Length: 296
Figure 1 (cartoon, helix red, strand yellow):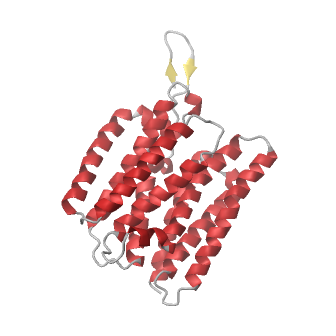
Figure 2 (cartoon, rainbow, N blue to C red):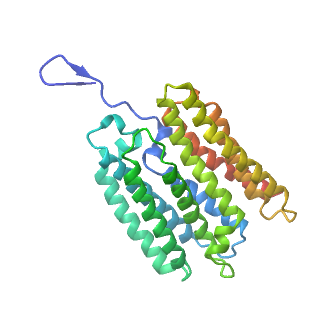
Figure 3 (tube, helix red, strand yellow):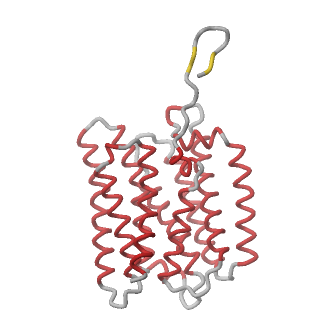
């Protein structure tokens, strides 16, 4: 509590954030997911040489993009505090720290790429840069609409996240090109999983704000149906792999889809901030499933 002026008026101080929310507030959740799934891609595609700088540069790049996006959203909605979510308000409050941090992380990631990465990475980076630029362009446009779900932005965000994660493993396979990666079942399933993970948060927030029961039901169906399709496709791909080289990967995507489905069905029990954290957990727990099934 703090006093205002000389009067007796007292207002509550900012509530202390729970410890489990800080990875989201610090934008550390997405880099952790990216690095974890990079390991899965590398093992699934049997990358013989996969150095530490691939993981570090990916984690730093993802962190920079997420921080930049949240700082941009916070700047767009400055003065409309009711629209600032916890993570955006946190980034706005500590803006100086995040700006300095992104500058250091950007230089470090660029140094690692130039100094250690193989030449084919630049072909992947060109496509990645176009995807990131498109994402930020759509982000500035879609942020203006408070009650609209930015489906196009979410699809592009999911594809960009999946592309950046997969390419850091795939470019170490000289016998295969970019188009082989884009057409692979592993990349497509992971891209859909990422898109649904991002869309789930928007759909949950939209349903939470809505008072119409039909809108709430539509938002739930918009997530339930594609998650069911993804789960079925992952199970089918896993069972149709007689050599079991990709089966653990698809078991992991199946687990991610199932966890998002469970969270979607029980979302009324949790706050929006808790749902954001659970959505990240739904992409991290499948890593354990992968490790267990890969050893069998």
